[in-house]
Image (cartoon, rainbow, N blue to C red):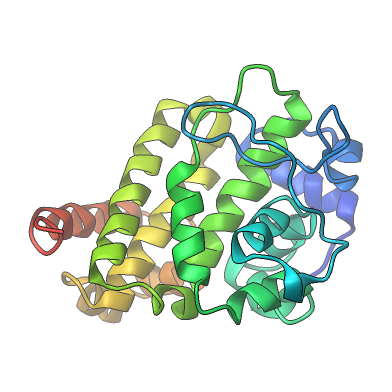
Length: 252
């Protein structure tokens, strides 16, 4: 597949089509600051808007790993990574070395632990006092961006068996939460979570997913690239996830 680039406006319009939403493109292009002019972060599990986030204008090498995570999931460049290429993984591969905070994060030995903790704290419902622009950035940039980063081998490789089980369990919970708030997340949001679940299984060689992917080009392509809604693929990954959580991860 050939990479294609679109303008920022068309990128955000495409996001609206993919996720079934109406976007204020001007606000998202400006980074969707909150009412105090600070970058937007996702709501935590208690539904409260977090405090101020660090800005990407600082020296990324001196930032804590948790601050780097906040910078990345609040940066409008994540729109480019997720939507402006033929697939989310192609966008990630193309931008990772040019997006300084992301490049720095992937070189941190504690990136996996920090990303896992932040993902577990993310809620699938936005704070009720958020503007529509803030909600759009949270569900179209922050959530799928976090799941795309977590799906990378170098991140998964930093997690031990217990942590991989925690991540798989959290992803299954996020998927259920997204489905309960389907008017917000739409199908694209579900696919980002399901791919993360599949990548965990694939990386850990749990269940039968490796063999299933070897025999099914649609499943293989979905795991490699993300974004494609192939018939039956979601059901296969969910079935394998349930089996692993009730067996391999039962005691973790």
